[in-house]
Length: 152
Ligand code: CA2
Image (cartoon, rainbow, N blue to C red; front, side):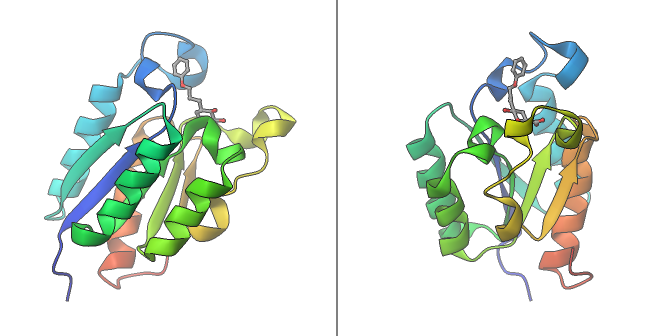
């Protein structure tokens, strides 16, 4: 049985700029819109969301470590750290909670340096290139994993 019906939503560097620049790649929704749609998707399944966005790697790692205490899973768009941060990957691996990796854009259609994710193989769920709606799908798939309805 799941006792902590709470998810941690992690958005990494520059995602605070959503809706202000590069709408052709990232759309027009703001970070507040993303946090609301994620919260609504979780609420539909009886979960709450704690949201964190930071441009600082250590702040993200602290939030991930703290999730051990009271969260059942993590939805993460690590932004550019996806492609660079072994430390973030180690934190996700260490806490042993199910992870859903989300990317707004279709990484497979972008630059070579975006083709590798250090997070991919510690995540049970991957939603890539579905715009911000992908956060809602990631929540649904992650909750399926948490509640044992599927394995990602
Ligand atoms: O597609 C995604 O969600 C990314 O994680 C977004 C990251 C990028 O480094 C990854 O390769 C893919 C960048 C987030 C930057 O977000 C901005 C939003 C609006 C304007 C400028 C940047």
